[in-house]
Image (tube, rainbow, N blue to C red; front, side, top):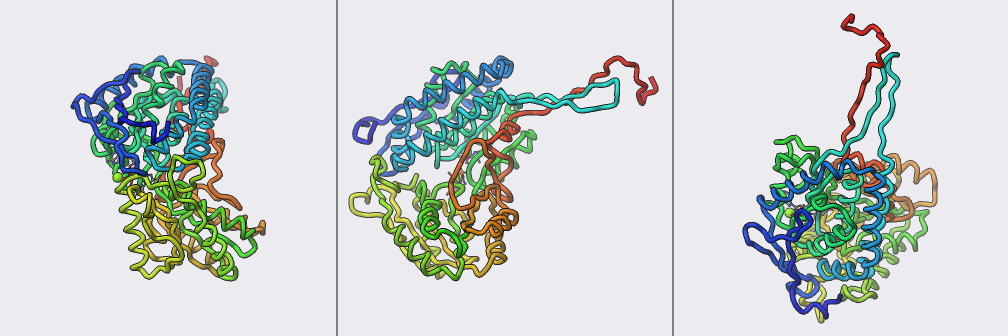
Amino acid sequence: MTTETLTQPMELGIFIDGKFENSLSGKTFKVYNPATGEVIANVQEGDREDINRAVMAARKAFGAWSEMPAAGRSILLNKLADLLEAKKEEFAALESLNTGKPMVESLFVDMGLAVDCFRFFASASRLIRGETIPVPSGHFAYTMKEPIGVVGQIIPWNFPLTMAAWKLGPALAAGCTVVLKPAEQTPITILKFAELITEAGIPQGVVNIVPGFGETAGAALVDHEDVDKIAFTGETKTGKLIMERAAKTLKKVSLELGGKAPNIIFEDADLDMAAKTSAWAVFLNQGQACVSGSRLYVQESIYPQFMEKLVDYSKKIRVGNPMEMSTQIGAVSSQEQFDKIMSYIEIGKEEGAKLLTGGNKVGGEFSKGLFIEPTIFEATQKMRINQEEVFGPVLSVVKFKDLNEAVELANDNQYGLASAVWTSNLLTANTMIKKIKAGTVWVNTYNFICHEVPFGGYKQSGIGREMGLQALDLYLETKSVIVDMGANTPNWYGL
Ligand code: NAI
Ligand code: MG
């Protein structure tokens, strides 16, 4: 699959109860290739009634799925991982076509993570367990974990299939059934993946996928009386709306939201490695990542030489056709996103930040697509480009004097998802690890994701931890059981 071979837009339906259906309203919407502006798919537009049909299918499937022995669910999840791995080139090409991200990233990051995520949760499903708790004699107490039920999952467009895997993996491992709403910009890979779900032998109705818009299909999922939990990844503003709305039915809610991660370079770091990795910390996926290291703090004493390395390296990054394996940065995902990023570049200039490189739309042969140069600003702490989530290839750099100032600047932000520290001093590293308020602290590395390790946000970056065994808890209830063993121990009724 390449851009050249796709001559006609794909026609894609809503996946309910194991079948592709048309929307009840008859409406469809268009999906674009952001690198060329071409329409690549017409997709059935799900709304309230389609969500309702999907929730009914998920409810019907819940009994048998939740009662299947964990070993059975594990086999099916492993099968799904194998099927995806066998087709990873095809899925990577579709992902690049729809998102504008370079093939090298789609293949090794997006598909690599999605496959491994299903493998991890295939194993994790067999580790679900409660505990026995010592209680007064004559009684026996234990806890058991039960799947929450029907889960609604709403995901963004930056890592479409990977985000679907991060949601489906733990939910299916826990024994929940799912109605998933992909982002309206990027429904293609997950709808194609639905075919693999069937092929793997996962029973119909266990996973339902309803493409559509947030304010309609997404909101209907959040409102639905028979949905037990909502798991959401996206903008912090949307997360707040969802939490408010979910309160009406008191659904369980887990949220993975925005970020503005501080990436902190101390004078005793390996500066070559730190400079190159810091470029990728922010420019990976055109900067459209929740963990993006978009606030760079550099110690004053090494500022000039570090910045020279960073800017030189960033200028050499190859921006180009996402479908070519040699491309390092592709197009940003949508016109809306492009406009937002360009407006932040303008805001940065107006605020008086000094542009060190980039700042423009890429022209020439790429002028039809949504390409933006890797951009670096020298900024100050309170500037909007250093405080707000730009979600694009835009880095703001601020100097600091010493460790205490680094801590203060790093924590002076509403978000707390990820962070990084570069130093060769163990004490510096350890002090920073303790003081930074973020769900992840990387030391002398960045963007290192392992499915064994919990992932999620402090502060306004979210609620709950995806990944690791902790992720299962997002989809499980704890039931406490207390049994009188018939020993006739006196109890407080005096009976
Ligand atoms: P968004 O948060 O609005 O969309 C994410 C998902 O939520 C999509 O599936 C969307 O259809 C759905 N949604 C939107 N409104 C909803 C509602 N009222 N009820 C239920 N579901 C709803 O993000 P959007 O508008 O695509 O992107 C805007 C900005 O958000 C980006 O520029 C970026 O700054 C940030 N963002 C951050 C992400 C992160 O992982 N940190 C991911 C995506 C966006
Ligand atoms: Mg939105």
